[in-house]
Amino acid sequence: MLKRSTINQSIRIALEIFKRNQLHLPAFAFWSTAQWDQRGHDADEIRDCMLGWDVTDFGWGDFEHIGRTLFTLRNGKHHDARYPKSYAEKLILDPEGQRAPAHFHRSKREDIINRGTGFIVLELTASDPEGNPAGGSLQVAIDGVSRTIRSGSRVQLSPGESICLAPGTIHQFWGEGGNGIVIDGIRYGVSGEVSSVCDDRSDNVFIGGGNRFPELLEDEERAFYLCQEYPAAAELK
Image (cartoon, rainbow, N blue to C red; front, top):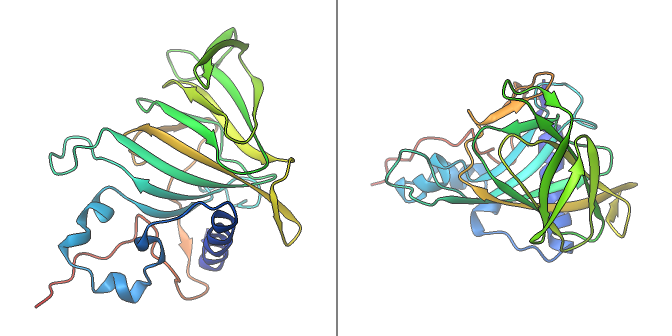
């Protein structure tokens, strides 16, 4: 189970790292739980499209090595005419040594962008029609320049570089070296994601298993709501 204290600390670090990289967040990134409890239907897009903070260990119980702290800035929602955006955008905190499990998306196409000052390293693997890792080669585009790489190989992005990942591409990525900002002995990179609509409840396939939204252990008071935790709209008078 992922501890609330770990979630709170990870969000605090993300706020500091994003600030030092001059990545500015919208106002709702800073809303307290008390403020959220008073929000009416004016904030339904944030609730329904799962914008905001997202911290997970994918059910692995090893957040230091397998985990993610993200902030979703914008998103649409499939089959809901109220939210017609066809795109999504996220910021992702990338501590050295931490990554998501190897996974692919059934339908989402995404650009991963190095938004920080360190390097972002991606390990990319092809998948077969059954969703299993496959050999051979992959066609990728780095800042619009096409490249053919061997399945299972790694690509390094320097600050400002980006790579486009097609649906079905098995991937992991993490921060590594460079001039990444250091807090308490840990070096942090920052990546961005610009993609088609993100449906984290049904579009992820984890190689070796995993839960996108794990069970939480409430060992201290919640500092921020996560994107899957927002209360229903308050009935304001």
